[in-house]
Amino acid sequence: MTLRVLHVSPYMAAAAGGPPVVVDRLVARAAANSADAHILTTTAYSDDSGAGLRRTYPDLTLLPHQRAALTGAGRAAVRRAVAQADIVHLHTIWSPLTAVAAAAARRQGVPYVVSPHGMLDPYSLAQKRLKKRTYLALVEGRVLRGAARLIYTAQDERDLAAPVVGHDRADIVALGADAPPGDTAGLRAAFFARHPDLAGRSLALFLGRLDDKKRPETALQALNLVRADYPDAGLLMVGTGPAEQALRNLTRQLGLQDAVRFTGFLSGQDKWQAMAACDLFVLPSRQENFAIALAEALHAGLPALLTRRINIWREITDAGAGIVIDDTDEAAIPTHLAAGWRHWLADPAARTRAASAAGQLARAAFDWDDSAARTHAIYRAVLAG
Image (tube, rainbow, N blue to C red; front, side, top):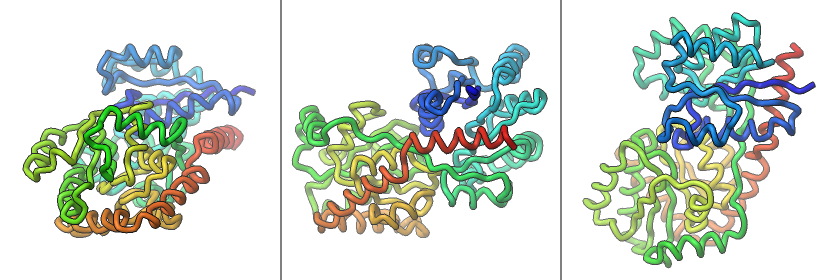
């Protein structure tokens, strides 16, 4: 029997980060798991009023914005989408869209599962704390209690969420990550053909939203320290976000203009070319549920510098594919980051071993086909339960 799945995400634009990627990959693998997938989303983060989303996903329900779910027409659209599903998968929380979809599912007797995507992490809960505490009491608590299952991406995510929702009804399914297409040497050559002034440098990669949460400024500060010993070290800052102008200003203040390249948001072949041009991946974030970009970098053979705030840090360090830095002292983070950076630059053989370990880990643990199969197995278990 074909399983009808409704994926509900407040946003599907690529610039929004991880959840849209997860939905996209699950939808792409629905047929292989004897399922038919539909998407309910909004135009949030979309710069073309959703036109691109309609081209990519012809069969979707698209609301003009998240709060549209609270209107009469929006609620009716949500109810229709839910009524056509055997099971609903809510991606993220703290959204009017997911709350209305959960309510519609409860009323219509359609079971639903929730992927919090790190939004029950203490760091996330501390942002707009009073507002979230109130919303949790009035709305989100019922959404979470009504879920047939809570699907986490890592053990750390489940444990960090436990004080709010407990350990019951919990499944852990690691996300997948894409692997680079084609020949790494060719991708690397294509990047340096476009950026010849960076050829010959040992480049680190920061790829993600340029936001205070990810502490991108510490990568610049660490580079400034590293260049005292390795003047050819450089950094690619791939992404956009509210901190971009401040980061550009800091780059000038530190005199790093020739060593740092801001590329803006990259996707597809451009993203893989940037990865192929780099020797390591830097993610000094305050909190990451999974970090798909990091897992993609592992597939590309990039050793990592990361904090324990990334929920897959144990897998990476156990495999010998990265170095965890101490971030308990905020002021010392650039120093610790620089020490790890120097380690990889000083010992190319160790970096080569870590690169091989990174690829092996990614292929074994972060595979979209496996992730989708396990997720669809949870759907069927819920319906059979």
